[in-house]
Image 1 (cartoon, helix red, strand yellow):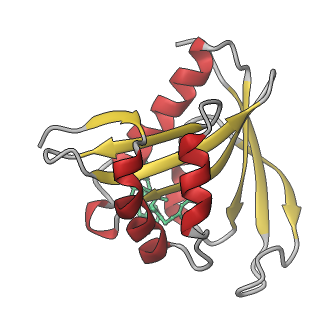
Image 2 (tube, rainbow, N blue to C red; image 1 turned 30 degrees about the vertical axis):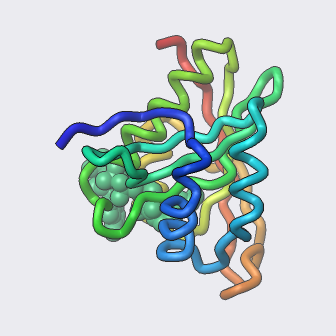
Image 3 (cartoon, rainbow, N blue to C red; image 1 turned 90 degrees about the vertical axis):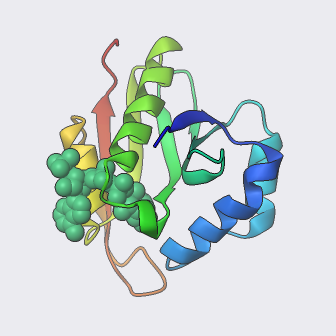
Length: 150
Ligand SMILES: CC(C)(COP(=O)(O)OP(=O)(O)OC[C@H]1O[C@@H](n2cnc3c(N)ncnc32)[C@H](O)[C@@H]1OP(=O)(O)O)[C@@H](O)C(=O)NCCC(=O)NCCS
């Protein structure tokens, strides 16, 4: 299967929102994705399959010295195949090319697959927000890492 990592297009939004509602406990509104897709400064990437439709997406914003991951998901039927790892690494590579030296994000304490990706890419847990997630009172882990030159 051929897979391409590219910027999200307007025509991807329906598929992206379907992934979001399938995997997130508290999905973002569809309009938020539409606004971010129009924002040329935002990092909004998809992994597209053979038919060019998104299997996964990642959304991040950047400042001078950091990349902040805001949303990141793989369609349930495509999970566990390394797609999430590749997409996350691609986002770090793009940030590295722009000279951004660090990455930061929040993750649910119980999210073992996401934690595996972040730890494998050198991120560390630097803080905890107790009871941060409204839907189940779960703690959020704050993670940061250096982005090495690729
Ligand atoms: C987190 C997510 C993006 C990972 O995507 P994925 O394509 O399934 O991940 P990969 O196949 O690249 O696997 C990533 C790692 O997680 C590990 N993993 C997978 N399922 C696991 C589990 N249940 N427990 C522990 N580790 C697990 C894999 O072994 C792999 O580690 P490895 O590279 O050391 O072998 C995906 O599970 C997802 O969309 N989850 C719902 C949304 C979400 O939680 N997003 C992150 C918000 S911070």
